[in-house]
Image 1: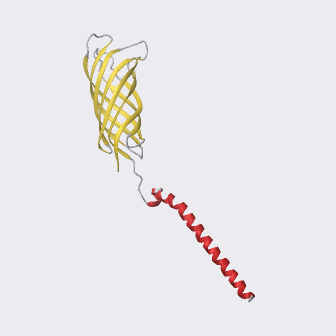
Image 2 (image 1 turned 180 degrees about the vertical axis):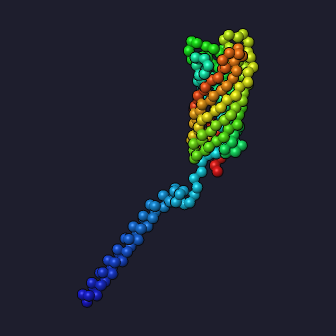
Image 3 (image 1 turned 135 degrees about the vertical axis):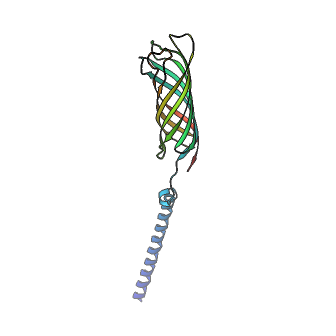
Length: 203
């Protein structure tokens, strides 16, 4: 009788231990499940990043004249149209505001530029280079009328895609243009950066 009682108590304890172990396993599985759901690498899903279709922005462009000891301020806006994730077309308009110091060389300057660029996107970062051509209407302090002058340029920069609709950018622009007075060229180095707006897709 005692042996039977001992066996019954042992069986009850083993059954209880098995139920507790199963309950702990179920709780652990429930805690792990959300982690699996939000882990693309675990599920074998490839993480995608925004690929822009069109971008627009406006910013202030400080510039340094390379052949004259003068610094200028410009206001500019540009748009970028992507016809491939690695290639795009860019259009830009710039307007001269004023010199940064007392010494001035330019009186008025408005220019339009267009060009094609190559992108080297890595996840959300998008370094790029552009070759541009443009046309300027410029008046120097020493002249009394505007003169039309062609220009060529090279742009190097990078952007960071915050979301499908916003991005940050920073870039440097070198521009070559002949001087209407036929002395030193009107080459300038521009820098800019800021926030831009975009429409993009995920690939």
